[in-house]
Length: 197
Image (cartoon, rainbow, N blue to C red; front, side, top):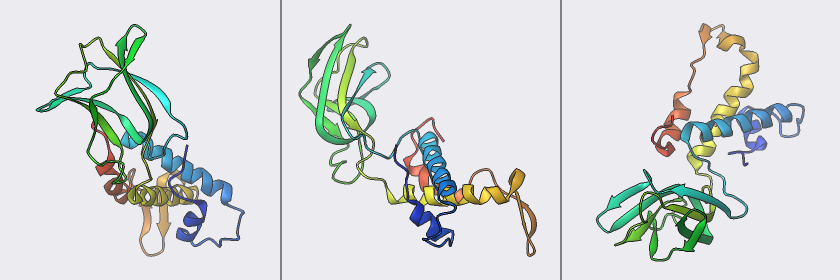
């Protein structure tokens, strides 16, 4: 797993000296928690597998019919190197050709492939399974996700000073912290899959 930011960037945001290592463990924990929270909220992850892995999908409820064929919706694929697509059922799979990745130019644009289009064809009956070997995740971490992780990590780090979600100042008095930071939500919302968030 990859965190969406660095302890050094978080220190800078919190005005902590770079050579002060006394809070590095707390900062790293806050950054990891913020990153995994973004994964959970968006329903995806923004780091790329080091090596290809195998995932199997049922075609039922994953097919979107298009004018030019059937689009199989898949988990984010961040690198096409080593991509293998096979279809079958009951453990017998054969290699599939004649598909296109969707959206077009996704990897070149720093975004993942989220579908495989069987051009003028079908992925088979509802009992078909599709087995995909690929590097899943995003090609690179989007800047908005890094910013959201740093904002949330700073908030989590400061939480140690605001028990029960209450903080105070001489100017504003006692203030209850909101459950969800609106800036974090605005940054991650465009990346959130339907049914998450």
